[in-house]
Amino acid sequence: MKKILVLCMGLGITLAFTSCKSSESAYKKAYEKAKAQELTEASAQETTPSVEPMAAAPVQQTVSAVDATFRQEKVSLVSGSDLKAYSVVCGSFGVKANAEGLKEYLDGQGYNARIVYNSDRNMYRVICGSYDDRATAARLKEDFKAKYPNRQDFQGAWLLYNK
Image 1 (tube, rainbow, N blue to C red):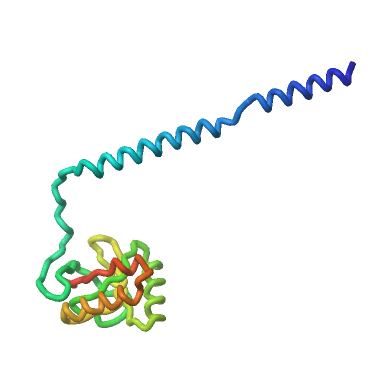
Image 2 (cartoon, rainbow, N blue to C red):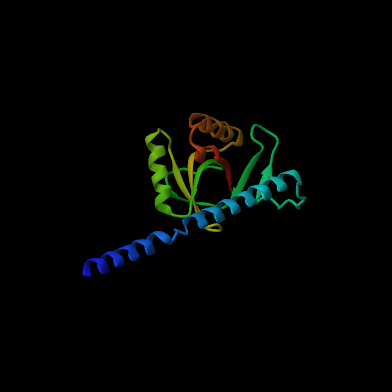
């Protein structure tokens, strides 16, 4: 009699655990439905372009020469030497230690890297070169980007004019 009772209890427990389906499939279905909806909304937005007013670019000036744009900021030298009027910024960081890490890497690559601080934006800028004329700085920027074609972070290098 005890054997039958133990067997029935074991069978009951087994049925209880196997009859409760995992809700994983329900989550998966909901995820797939949301993803499909997201894709249809994205394709609908691509076909009907929205007309939005363009926001003003942050302190950029256009000059007709080798590289037309540069950003004008007031920065102070944190590490390195001789900051000139036009500089090539290859990294911007909110944390000084990250800027120092990139500076060390660039110094190892043969650059005379500098770190400057923009107090208005609370950002540390890493500069790989600084020149008195904009054309020379623009050439360095293009050479720098060409030297590191696989580094997306370096492809965003830009010119800084120190006010």
